[in-house]
Length: 557
Image (tube, rainbow, N blue to C red; front, side, top):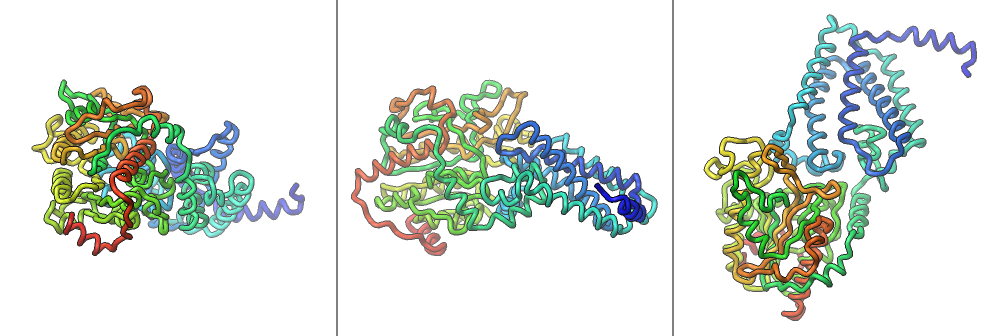
């Protein structure tokens, strides 16, 4: 209870505080509610919550939002507030698009580590902006009207007393709920951005990431996550399915945005992926889960390491991550040459640095391909047709017992394609239509690539993740299982037919209960077994420098 003598003093202090105008109160309310709405759309906890707990979290978060907005309105001058408001729609749409595309909230570490990649493909994401998001522009106009239409600058003059009171209340409230609900420090151990953000919003959660998630912690979490158990027994899968032949040449073809839903899908009676359909019928074929995770680099990380990638940042971005025991390293101990070819710069997701540590013997990224006269430097990725032709040409120069990873990029959103190559929707730029022409073009290149390979080459074709394209008008929907995207995973032999070698029931193979990691471990185990049976073990070469790698690429490769 407050003593009677103290009450008049409190009333006197409050009376001296400037009363906020109606415009200021309305502005604070609009701003806080739009922030809260964006948080509701994107900050979804990864752990179970009771209804009571979820309600408490929301009450705490809207209180923090109101206090923060009130503090900014009281403390910041009008020009700075106007600039902040102008940035709001970009921020809101950005975090919503990130959440929708990656199925997780944007973290500060992901923002820092992938900012460069984000700038390169920014045009792709803005192509996903939906009409309803124009509401943020409408709210911006309303906020600016309240801010600058108040008649004079007086209502928005710096209010030090109000700002001080709001700051003290904000800090005190956070300090109170922090030990009672979920300490911010938990983000450094087991909790996620979604879990902490559901209570505190983005700003405090991002600050907590910087305070409690250092490089050592990120690396430790990534290593611990990499040994997560898979839902289906891999050893049983290997025992049942691991009898297919593996040729002396092994090729992994990672296809950008390859949906399982494409198999046998037609538009006006015409197959969208006729080559993939043909290869599907003569391969060991699987429908597997391929989580988008932190980006397409998660797919080749699984393919090359046989592990679960980090969920905090792209694993290749973590300094000091241990690559010992990689699939590439094991192949090289068996005398198998290993190379990687990708039409995007080697700095994209830090692939070059990681691949050198695995260690690949030769790397052909955009930089090396341009030096060899393959492609032009006017786009962020060299066209897949040129990349795949270069891969075939290089494979022809290499003796047997080789492994090559080829990663495509042309079918990356927003699916740009020359008008002459568009056969379904020549005039459409909407991604929900442009995707089909883009993947149809890449499909033709895949068929040409496989047919050009030496007979007996084992080829593994898989999607890095789904395209995120939905088109109800065409009857096209993603194939999902437990909320994750399903992609095709094919093991085939150039010039041969492996479909009859499939041993596990088709109900399991095509159920999406298997993950891409199951399939990669299956291929890795069988390939290592086959190469070990053909040649005695030899010493592996260590990782090379970029200069050495480039020389190797331009020489033997």
